[in-house]
Amino acid sequence: MTRRTVLSADLKERHVNMMAFSACIGFGLFLQSGKIIYIAGPGLAIVAVVLASSVMWSVVACLGEMTALFPVQGPLFEFPGRFIDEAVGYATGWISWFAWVAILAAEVLAVAQLWKFRFDEQYLRDVGYPEKELGWSTDGYSPAVWVFLFLILIGLVNLLPVRQYGQIEYIFGVLKMTFISGLIVFNVIISAIQLVPHGNHFWTWNKPYGFSSESLVVHPSHDVDTGVVLRGEQGRFLALWTAIVAALFSFVGFETIAITAAENKDLEKHETIKLATKKLTLRITILYVLGTFVGGLNVPYNDPNLINIQISSIRAGQNSIFVLAAVRNHLRTWPSLFNAFFIFSATTSGINSLYNSSRLLHALASIPEAWPLWAQNFRRRLERTTSRGVPLGTVTASWAVGLIAFLAVKPFPSLVLGRITNNAVVSELIAYAVICLSYIQFYHRIKAAAEDHTLENRSAFNRDDKQYPYRTHGQLFRAYYGFLFCLLLIVFNNWRACVSPFSTADFVSSYVGIPAFFALVAAYHVRSDGWNPLKWRRNASMQIQRPPPKVVVPGRRRGHLVYPNPKEPVWNEENLRALVAFIWGWMK
Image 1 (tube, helix red, strand yellow):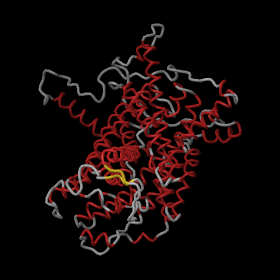
Image 2: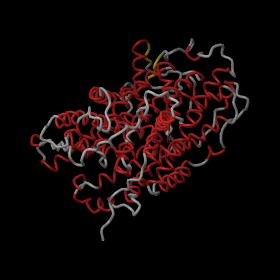
Image 3: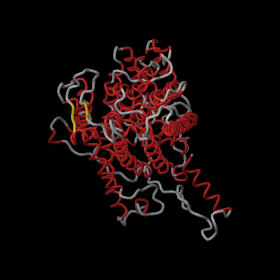
Image 4: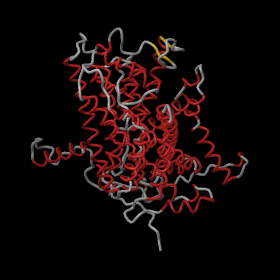
């Protein structure tokens, strides 16, 4: 009997939009915003977020254009294997899969930490909060309880057929977007009305605070002697760099758009990859910039609870700058409501992490060469899908690795969480750098094909043709920019670990991904070319005909406003209908 091994192409453009959005909005925005402001100060934090957004903008456009033209399964490793080297592609696939199962564990660990919601009584007295206590009674529960319950929930949601899964993710994404928008408005209002008078709406930007932090504490602590402190221009530059790293760590997940390619429905008609890529970039950038800005209006960058995030001794709702804004303005109920939503957000991001890891593993399972000989039987089992297209084997295998979240029972789970997250994100940065490098090769390959008169379908590779599915201006420059920026982030992502006192654990967690990646590349070359590195050969097919390139359906392109009757006023019935369709297309 033939076993089903293909996924079901049932996802619509709106599903993909919100799946990618939901993947990017876990606990990062709500907790990392405060961390960025503590490191750099409220003004410089916005600069850091904008620069981090530019890296995301560059990488996602590279991946989006290649995937729109060739909607292959496993694009994160398929394109590097095709345009750089087969071994590089397989290595990228494995480190990306590991990164996503690690992020799954980190999200579940974050959920367990968020249930430990309780403010220090001295802090409440210092800010004049009207209650003596603020916290949940769940702070005494074992973290293992929450890890077990939420891992079960995450696994069950991922067993749904992809169409139902996409519908649920769409609802999750809409709820997150609505909540974040409300959170921004909430912070603007409490800054405007000054429930606790400060004399100036920009009091956190003025002395004794400022646009940027006065100094950078290399190893933050609550000790009287904080160790190495950098001041002046050097301190501000390194604070900005450290904040960029922290901000980019919050953006991981945008590649979900490409991962869904094999399950997208009617790519030519709906232009899913193009629209989803543009929408995600705009939404994430705008919301993160505004969220960071309004958070910095209400909480000074040296708040003790923001310092705790940097130390990683505590990582819960009481460390969120948005919760702190409510507490500092003496508001009841709101802090608990915000923390509850943070739990929801981290859970839904964990659901998406399992989806991404399972689809990456399923794509790897379809390639025998990516596996050692002794694992071929296991690979064939992972390749199978249910009658509804759910890769049950890869969902189960990825979920099982997520059990490392039970590290939450250790005395300092937030330290474990931080190191797992750092390791996973560095692996993702390696994948992003490889994607940008792949695009550079891709760009020159399709440019040559578009000029090759012997090809019957050469117009499909012409980036200036109206039927080319997705292109952006200056994309080659952006690919170089994204590659170099990611390279710098990989090398200097945790420079502080090298400053005395040297932290072996932090250094290893931040940099072990680099030798692991090259070790995987070397292992594949040893298998194919032998032990002598001088005989290793680059194996890049540069294939651009399999699958055949996608071209969009002739006619009006989606995402562009074109009036049917340009000589008529906007309120003409057909013109108005086109305007409404354009607005709805960008909002949904």
